Image (cartoon, rainbow over all chains, first blue to last red; front, side, top):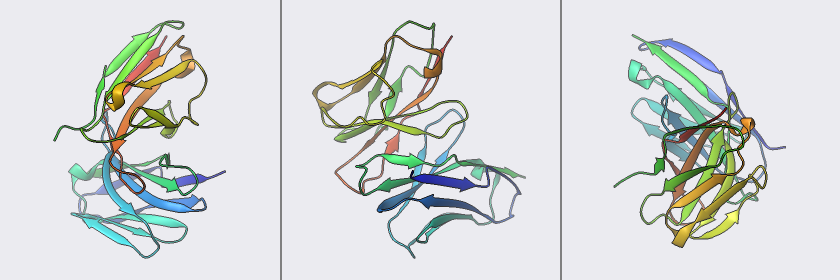
Length: 111
Length: 114
């Protein structure tokens, strides 16, 4: 069965303490890997799409990278406003447009 | 540009009752998706519309769930009769075009069945 696993489940950081979140997938025919941010009581907010190994995308303090079996979301010098749940999702070639989500990583950045 | 909107934001109903959730996608987006997150689990796909047609309904849990998309605009998801295990947050998303388009999510409807 196709699976998407995110680690760690939760991450507590001090403001300015850089770290990385992991998203590993055991799927075939990857047709896109997506990162979303979700704040409490809100829907997932689109961050990045990655399509092929070696690809990287950046937005402010966030940088997403992709290999053949996993993706990393690097948070550089985080601020308290970066506190959120970060979700990873994949789209498979044989599965139409539906997204398969991981369980998410809850990030708390303390001032 | 207005984002995806969902109504209601919260709904509390008793087991056996009927509830209808509504989603208005971003204007011009032909693709509309329903997902849900039940307590402690990851977000799961329910179904996908392209305009008014159901493209993929492989995630619909059973025949108590009925989704429609009138005229290819807004969509409704009806649960009848509701069961306790239907409680969760129901998200709607929309996207432009075909393959490769990112999906934009609404704020969700929190459904509680008591």
